[in-house]
Image 1 (spheres, rainbow over the protein chains, first blue to last red):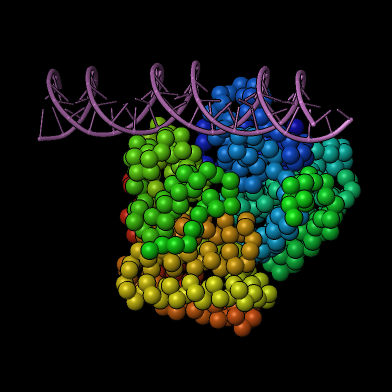
Image 2 (cartoon, rainbow over the protein chains, first blue to last red):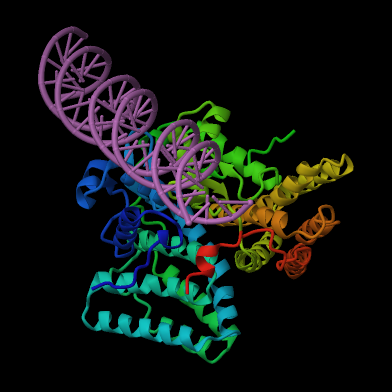
Length: 235
Length: 235
DNA sequence: TTGACATTGATTGTTAACAATTCGTCAATC
DNA sequence: GATTGACGAATTGTTAACAATCAATGTCAA
């Protein structure tokens, strides 16, 4: 089913168990199978992964440090629930990073990397044909991480992965239609632009793609942020 | 002496003790008072901060997740020692993020922010006049974080802070002369370009500044990375 | 019925003892 | 004299019991 080990903890020297826990939660968020505000209780995770409480807590701390999970003191861990402002922030950050990254890739092409990206595109197509919803969603997100990995900068890859994962949460919260989230052939155009070595075109393709995703959101819909009566009635 | 709470854990809901630990280590690295490969033993940190082992371990984990500290299994925590390749990576990432960030700031000026930056410049000047070496180093680094904070994007600010701190380690390892690290008036030029609303000029000033820092390095000098026999004899 | 209050149960946070690993020292041997 | 081996001390990793906090339920009085 899934094969690429997308590990967040990938470059870090974490023990194998924790890598698994983090990866699984990451993937679940990517596939939108873990909705925002879902409680991640220690006991449940210990059970699921057959692991002691210590590992679970460390994993949750790392996930929290990346904005994937919120840690409420004495109340446990919850899947993060980005606000509209945070959503803007994430897209702004992606706009600031990804176009330049792809431009640099186009101006210094590696056949090996191009081949890998094309392979990824094929997997996306296959998933789309088979209508495997969660697989489609995950692969769409991972595409951007693959781009970053292709460039070969570990720090930037880590940043992009974090932003992409948070984007998954955002799309789940603010996406207007469950289906057209998918970018018709945006990804293909990006890869082709890179392959032809046209940096400007590649950068523009990425920008357009991000705008496209952002246009599929309705940030006024407040499925997130439960009423928060305290603040409303504060005056 | 120091006043700005530069906290890494700033936006995160960590408990106060951990914030202090992380901040202090962060600052010490920024000021190059903690050299790469310095051992950070749990016992010593517990003593220093009057805190239990748990807090120390959590703090070290978070620092490790940002590349400031290396965690060797069963052998403890050490201040990270970036390789030449990682140094390149950090500068590449900064080149990819900071110019765009500053351009965006210039194109959407906030008097409040400009005022804050000018205040920071004054503190830098003061430190330089008094020849407070570690203060100069720290403020020079923090300037870039202040830029990011000025833009107001928490995610980008976090990324920049991480990169700036790692830059401190890199300069300490690969810097050629202990003194000329300081950027004569680069920072001032950046602020002025922003203040006049000239995005291109501001972006260029940042790029030049980063190149300037990078030119002060000699990545061939191998003060870092002890022989590493394991890898040499691996074949 | 509603509101405040106390009690209970469950969950998280902390501590301290225990286990496992590594590092340094010292002696014995080649 | 250098190298190997074993022993002991120190450090890290793990576990399990304990303490503290919070959510929920139920009770009682207005």
